Image (cartoon, rainbow, N blue to C red; front, side, top):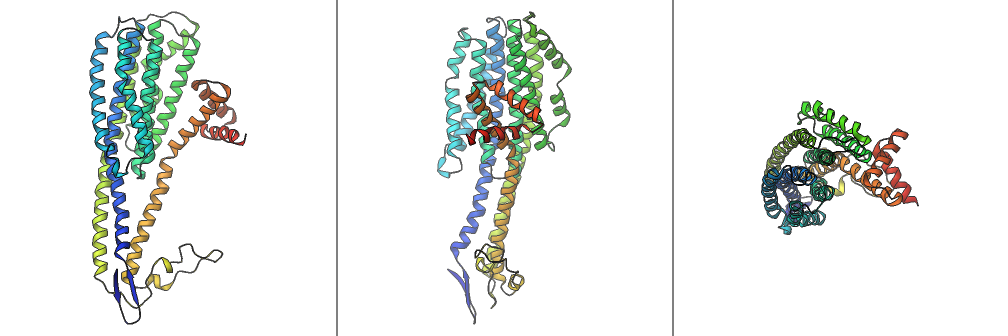
Length: 438
């Protein structure tokens, strides 16, 4: 127990109290270090998803053309995907396997194990593709499931982030990655249609839904990351380049079942890939900003810890006056007896006589205000993820109740939003509320 005495009273704060104050700052530092590590993992996920998306598209053309197209490109792409997979496995093992630190949630670790299990079985899928024992649709579905699990990893990292500015960047990155995955699925479905030589109405509708979903995700990304994104590239992605738009119109015109040259699948793949590569450039911009911001916040946190230690050393060398020290017990801003009115601020709060204890309590209050402000900013930054979860839950309810596919459920939500002139999230909330009341 650290204490100081004078003629009128004995006042003190314990070493345990001081240690807990420093522990709070150290916990913040640990969170920042974990986020800095996680930013490297997220970069690895981004790269692997990009390679898997390329492999998915190439495999589709390879399957639909009965091994006539992209045979060599597929073999080359496998090597790139394998290299990215190995790098991600190393990062995950390095930063998330030492679970004794308690910095990773059980949900995140479970999601990692699920994704790795999918990667463990990827070679079996590739063998089926090489031997033409699987359809393009089945291959696409398998790749999409794996990519979805990796995207969920990014969402879980963003949800568990404890720093507002880093959270905003992570959510913006997730929006971009989700938009790119929708673009990848559009490329995959388009490649299947061209390679098969026809576009059924259901396929054309699915392509339109994917285009709309891309726009929604890109708008969310721009809202969160406009300061660091190349808005010229982003605007082009929102509108689509002329060549891609021309092919999109052609696909819609072919919805009557008119046959089309299968060779166009490679043209479509090329233009779609250009779009996806540009989206990947935007991802890299966010990742660079994320790495820089994580290091900046870590440096600031280390500096704040040094200042805290210095202030505490200075406080321990000062002499307390006879006045009542400011503490939780005398702070009128803290909740007290139920039914009493807030007390006016006591003069002692502004007194210089209780300098030792007043200043120590100020450190406690500064830390509390800092945490409260961070929590508010975190809530705002994570709102996009919350909205996405709400829409996903509403889709699932519609799929279960009305026996709809995911695309049909999403389309129904969109139509409900349009007819009621409400936001999609508002409609989703209404669907969930109606289900809860049953």
